[in-house]
Image 1 (tube, rainbow, N blue to C red):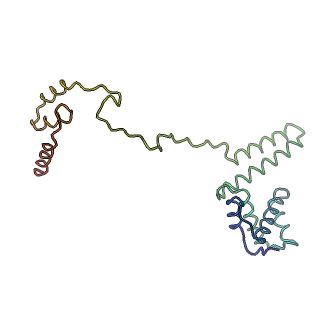
Image 2: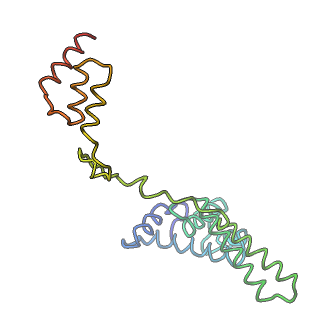
Image 3: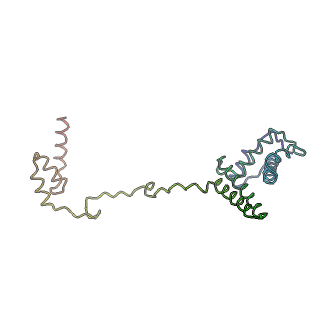
Amino acid sequence: MADFKKSYFNELQDYIQGGSKEELSKTAQEYLDALYLLNNLRRKYGKENAISFIQKPPLNITYRRARLMFDEAINLFYADDGIEKQALRNLFYEEFNSAAQVVLLTAKDSKDMEVYGDLKMKAYKAKELDVPEPPKVPEELYKKPNKIYTLEPKHIKLERANRDLLAARIDNMEIPNSEKTRLRMEAEIEDIDFIELFDEQEKKTKAE
């Protein structure tokens, strides 16, 4: 018989989450059997009766350990990714549904059906099926955007600028000739003179 003074909960949790591929030790298997028994007794006779039962022979588990093992049974058989609140929601959902099924099978009048409907609604809420699902994040917000760099307006469905009109507008601007030259090069009206641009930038840096 397993030593129920020690908890094997973590070992059992790893065993289940790992797809039950590894072999359980004999003591861990006996511990799992005890938790399984606790859970079945709870479903049929309630929490306190289940805890009371495993305190008696042949298990002889102390009251304190029995209560701790009861909590472990709930978390082991109802937990969802280790979230204890979700484990309780799953537990309540099952209990309300089970109670509703009993009422449905023994219903004699409309009042019994009202009780049935109330229990089903409680199960519905226990599972949080009444809570709206969070809106889905549009794919474009987390997908890496495709960036296209181009000097051709047609690639982004724009018409090419009229270079003659653009040159005339630049010439009519009241700015220094050096700025006009830079704008004409940036607008591809003139070939880019990188040496001149570097010299111009160097002059600005020294002036600052």
